[in-house]
Image 1 (tube, protein in one colour):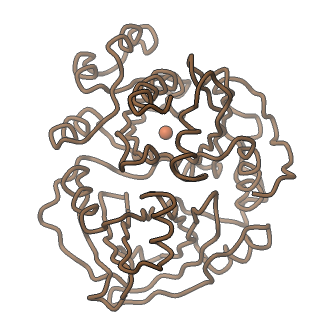
Image 2: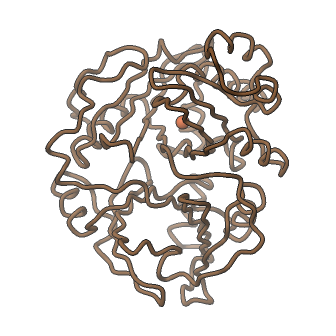
Length: 387
Ligand code: FE2
């Protein structure tokens, strides 16, 4: 992204403090947003990826689009678990954009699609505010109804589709609907937040982008002192829509003794992109128990992590032995408690992963866990020889 960013209001507000400027600005009311619509992941083999998401993460495969439905060069599967909607797409042609994307980045999130009441108006506004349009306003029709979408560029090769879907058609209108009688859900409910990793010096540009284009505001800021270990550090700012339906933390690497995990991501993804998608659950203990049963790879924390939990999160309403056995992370902020866990990397490259989060009133992102999490990531990073 071009330089020339302006400073974000109230930047240095310390560790996890709510920013004074986080109230809804009148200006954003002309860019109404309903929330996240879906994410699309570009992969090497959509067929196998869809089956993995079903068998291990419990998604239903609800739709398909490919050569059999008149699309010659890609194969896509639409997945669903409650309000979490994911499309996985693979390419059938060596010269397709997806094939080049895959060669460069490896599998990863291509599209963080946002639900809007008017896709045409949203595109017009976004472009007028300096966003780059990547797809004009298009109506997609099928037997089950229609929706209208457009798209703009985000960080790296990531895009934001702007989807106008008042009839809540899913799978997408041009997909062939499938009934999935095999999937057994694990309690995943909705997309909670989507985290970007961007290059050193670009975090503020992207914060400014979301403020300018969408009218988002800075919610939180974590500096490298708050988020650092012996080896690496990162800085993070969270922008949101003001009502809580969209939260986008943006990370950039900070200088540490060795290569930071954000740098490792940027090296392997060849640039900025989505680091993780956090998905909410109402009962993380059962979600994780089911996930472990199915062989899901999850990031683990050392036993020592649990030593200070009773003091750090007093009155935790959960069986600590169970939490420990399942390797769940716990945190607390002004709003309440929070339980979370991170999956291992979803692909061979150390780039994209998922988080599962149960909010018991907490509004943060598990800041108290950042350090424990980073140390866990660094152990894996060291094993890969990248620390
Ligand atoms: Fe997160």
